[in-house]
Amino acid sequence: MASRATKIDDLAATAGGSVAGGLEPDDTGSSGAEGQSLARSALRRLRRNPLFLVGITIIGLFVLLAVLAPWLAPHDPAIRLLDDQVSNANNEIPPSQPGHPLGGDQYGRDLLSRMLLGSQQTLLVALLATIIGLGGGTILGTLAGAFGGWVDTVVMRVVDVMLSIPSLLLAVSIGALFAQQTQFSVILAVAIVQIPIFARLLRGTMLSVRQSDHVLAARALGVKRGAIVFRHILPNSLGPVIVQSTLVLAIAILDAAALSFLGLGAADDSIPEWGQMLGNAQDYFDTQPHLAFWPAACIVVVALGFTLVGESMREALDPRQRR
Image 1 (cartoon, rainbow, N blue to C red):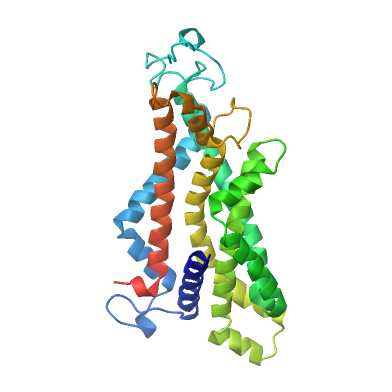
Image 2 (cartoon, rainbow, N blue to C red):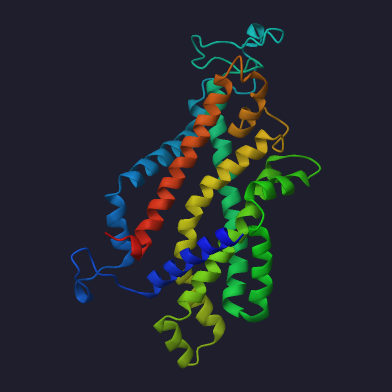
């Protein structure tokens, strides 16, 4: 718990200091009138960062495939077109053949079509889980950062307890509570795991921004606390949280895939999802490893893309990492 919480607090302090700092000097050391905003400086560094370019390319291709999947998929992923070629006795799977570049799965369904449609479900689960987690974390973080006192203590103790449990173990525990496993149960389980990360980061950033000059000036002028929080503190604290959501997307993809792999995903596999496909391939690891290879490779590559983008953005916004 201490390690995860400390990392989040360090990120919040750094982000809060960057936001409060206003204009930053450029690479030549000039400042003042010749200075530039933190966002513009960060964008310039991102454009020169090869890791960011690789990550954004991976994400772009992933999103494009997910959006166009219904039109790119050559067959209906639920129809057993190659069922006559499946032999359960010998664990035989339809091989690659004309019209089916990746062959079929253990039920004779076109594997390429299922991979393409699976990207859509994977993106949907990750996005919804991250949005719900961001919303919940924003509410808790705002309460803790705005009110302080006993409200901050209660919220942060709950957050600390959640952070003390490994994220995947917590997601599995939450997913197992549902009587019927559905796609919604996976989304909710992954979202709840992300809430304390966003809450602690936002709270730490708000505490840093509270000490900035414009907030102190607003207090001195007698501006009400609600106006200060929602007009000055909260808007200037959301940037680091949004950047963190890029990293959380990668975690959400991995956690959702893990839940589906463990059998806690949707029971109906007529709508494919990469983690579910990986779980269904468990019995064929030895004889037909490609059934597990394709979904596993896609999960790893897409998660890597979001991680590269998130780390690059965090580095670009960190004044200690500037070169």
